[in-house]
Length: 331
Image (spheres, helix red, strand yellow):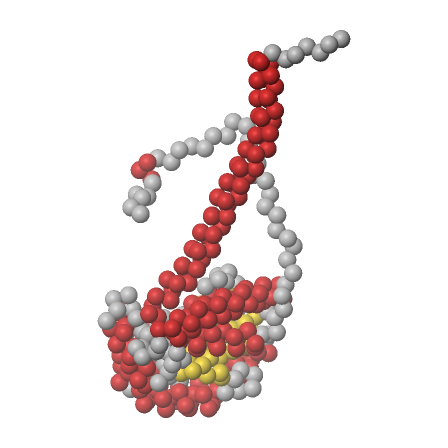
């Protein structure tokens, strides 16, 4: 039998179906590409936010950069600085994982001149770490009650348990520094400190605590420059206490106290390490790199993380938040 010729109307329908079938995969590919593009943009923004966090911290350094350095040289070093800092912070996360898994106990002491860069180094060490594993101990002046205690007692309560790291932003060495220079302790109390501290630190080491001690060193001229920067920067004026200003006047007395302290408390179980900090960025990198070299950490293998699917319950409806509870969107 002869085949019936399709009418023009039927031919159009067949053609439309074929075109529709071809268009569907293209539409799916386009939608998938758009979704991927959106996801990539969100990931990119998340990375940028992380970088901005570091840049925000670095803004405090911009006000203290001295003139004279070539702009290209400065830019090149800043690129190198951020690259190295990121690499070292990745290693610090690995160190943290190892400390947590092996139940290691680590204490790092940061001492040094005012405005020498201790706080900046501590910030960069802790920036990417878990505060439940790595915490900072920055004790205020002792209370009347604490002054009657055994001298090391208030510091001992901040020592780490297994799987913890503690960074002391100033420590029991206040006795050999500010207390000695400002007359807050007697000569007998100072001498007792020098007799006791080596035994105290040996006891910590015997108990399983690894103790690392850093002294941040800065010159007279550089400290004066940084103090002036703080005086004229409203974001940093809080860093200048009356004690800091007095320490500037008594520079030589602090130098003599530091020299005695280092010579009498530098022991094999817990030696001192001096960090030259004329350039704060280089000082940070050198300190972090050295800290990593002092701990025998290894990369910890983790079970791959898989995000579980969200449970959807029939009848669940999210309740709207009352408008009065919403923070005004000013930005």
